[in-house]
Length: 391
Image (tube, rainbow, N blue to C red; front, side, top):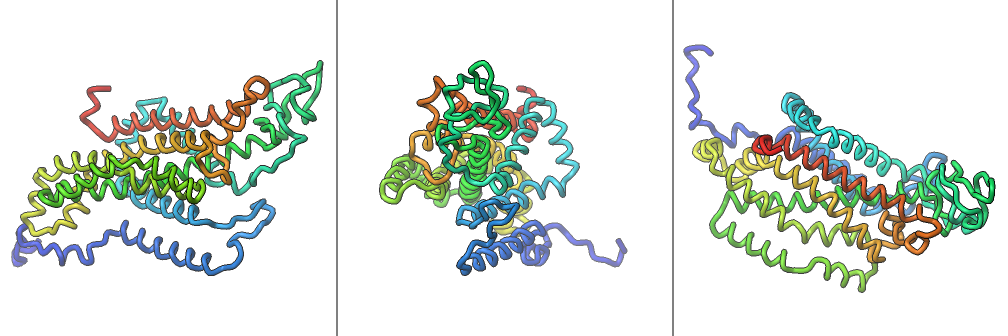
C-alpha cells in the first residue's frame, strides 16, 4: 500500500457502506431462486390442468400440490444454506469429512440415506400409485416361499405345494394386491417430506428466536422465552387430533401443526449456544465498530451456532419420521397418501401368514431411524471439537 494512502482504522469502518445492501451472494442466490419458485407457483395456480400430464415416463402424471411447493422450498434452503457453504469452504468441508468418516457406520448410513433420498425424490414419479388387485394378493417376496393356499393366484413358480416369489413383485404384495415395492417407495417420499419440511420450519423459527433472544437479552429475551414456555406446555398433539376431527387427516396439516408449534426446544438449545457466542471477542469488536444487531446476528452469531443447528436437525428428522409413522399406524395420518406406518398397520392382522406386509416397511423404517442416529452422532463429533475427547 502506498505511503500516501491514509491508513484506515478498524473503528472508522462504515459498516453500512461496506456491506452494500447487506446481502451475501448466497442470500442473493436464494432470493432469486425464491422469486423463480414464486413465479412458477402463480403460473401453476392459474392453470386449470396439471403442470405435468401423464406420459411414458410419468405414469400417472404429476399434479403439483402445496406440499410439493413447500418441499421445493425446503430443498432450496438445504442447497443454499447447507450444501453451498460446504462447497465454498472446501478446506473446512474436507476437515469435517475426515472427522466424519472415522465413524464407518455413519459413512454407510449416509450412503443409505442418499439412496433413500434419491428413491423418495424420483421413485414415485416412475412407479405410480399402486392399485387394488385382489387376485394378486399376498404374493411373497423374491426368495421366499409360502404355502400355495396363501395367495389367491401365485404369480411365481409353484413347486411341492409352495408358491415362490416373483420378480414381478420383488418385495411381495399386500392382501389387497398392492405392490409393496411401490408402497415402500411412496413411503420414502412421505418420510423425506416430513423430515425436510417440518424440520426446516422448526429450525428456521427456533434458530431465529433463539439467536435474537440471546443477543438482545433483557425484555426481548424474557418475552420470547416465556412464550416458548407457554408453547411447550400447549399440547400440539391434541390440536392435531382436533383438526383431524374437524377436517380429516392431512400430511400438510401434520407439517404445519408440528412445524409451527414444536420449535421451542430448538430455540432454547440455540439460545444457549448463542449466549456463549455473544460474549466472544469478535462479536464485541463488531459492536464497537458500529455493526447493528441484524448484521451481528446474521454474520457472526448464526454462522457460529450452525454446528448446533445441524446436529439438532439430524435428531429432529428421525423423530418426526417415527412420529408420523406412529400416527399413520393408528389411522391418524393422511389416508390418501401411502406411508410406512399405514402399510405396517395394513399387515398387522396377517403376520402369521403374510409377515412381509408389515415387516418390509418396518425394516426400512428401522434402518432409516438408525441411519439418522449414526449420522447425527458422527456430525456432532465432527462439528464440535469439544466432543473429540469423549468419543
